[in-house]
Amino acid sequence: MPQGSRKRLILFTRYPEPGSTKTRMIPQLGTAGAAQLQRQMTRHIVSRVTAFTALHPTPLEIRFDGGNKNLMAAWLGAAFDYSPQGKGDIGLRMGRAFEDGFGVGYDTVVIIGSDIPDITADIIHKAFEGLKKQDLVFGPAGDGGYYLIGMHKSTFIQANPRLFNEIRWGTDGVLSQTLAVAEELRLSYLLLDTLNDVDRPEDLAVWQRALKPTSEPLGKMRLSIIIPTLNEAERIEETITHLQKSKAVEIVVVDGGSRDNTLELARSLGARVLVTNASKAVQMNAGAAESVGDVLLFLHADTRLPDNFDAKVMAAVDQNGFCAGAFSLGIDSDAKGLQFIERVANWRSRIFQMPYGDQALFVCRDLFNEIGGFPDIPIMEDFELIRRLRRKRKISILPDCVRTSPRRYLNFGILKTWFLNQIIIAAYYLGIPPERLARWYRRDKGNFGN
Image (cartoon, rainbow, N blue to C red; front, side, top):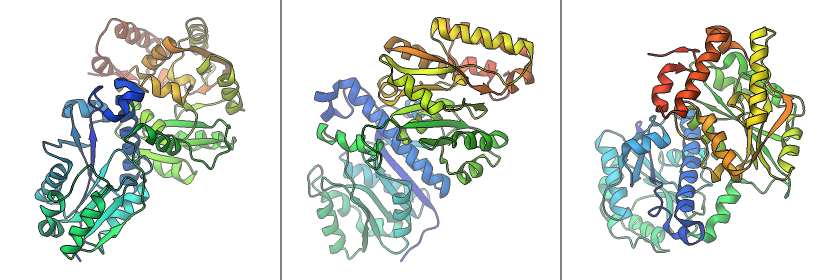
């Protein structure tokens, strides 16, 4: 049995354009809601895929329908390869994807869809492991189709085009017809777990169950803490250890490609770890998609929450009209200039309801999904999220303070950092593109960019 050493994983999805995405959902969700569901589900699957590739390095290609490469990269990040699915039915498009993958030198290719929220890194791993002994591997879908198919190059040569051309696509007999062809060709196959896809309004319960496992008590609100990281080994252990004083929270670390041992430390402490490209917006959206909490709290790795933070967040959420909020700002330094910045930031937060990301923003999942999550921009993503939240609901500013590191101010200078912050905000209001602003302000280094 062939055991190719070069593996490729391919994800089939569609660009979330209202009116042409998840069309069967439009009668219930509307065009914008259906497109938003597509956006959320694809991000969810990408987070599962990156969890797999973090443990089993495998190149990912995203085959898309609608949109273009630039739009896809702006949406999901530039870390992946993108190719259009091309014309024809799903069989022709999958056949083309396999042919292209084998044509550039891969020995084993697995294709998955983006409509199966229960797919996991373990299932993907089982698919590649299964292909060490079998010609084909399938992930059966509850509607009679399949959500995953994998094979070797030699299998493709033997089975193509029959495996894709002799199937009545869109019927409940897709898998059974495919297996009949495989048996006629004397090809061995492995069947993975049967999972349900989300394609019709009645399937929405599958999506909700995937986000909210039934193991939790009904009616109990859950809190997920999402921490975007990049080379935070000096701080992540202390941050996670402090959070674990509360037993009722989920901790999700989303790493942007650390070169130190941030990932190893986070995993050793029991946090759920994901890997994406280095974009805070992409990281936080991926963490939100992967998490299970009813309330999401986005925490910087160098920020410590106050004691009993979980009870305080849930109490704020329980208040009528408060579905989003943040803590007051505390900077972990006695420097007089930083004390002034604290006072100004807290005054701004309470008067104008404009907290920033280092104040540990929290928001109910439903509201976060409704506004589309963090905008995928290289800077000011937290600022824009708050602006969107303000249009929907009143924002609660809790009196308890977080304690955030002064490193950015001390590295660059207190006055210079504060002044640069104001320039960036004013420029953003004036409509200067975030890409240009990001070149001015290197958030992770605290200095001007070129």
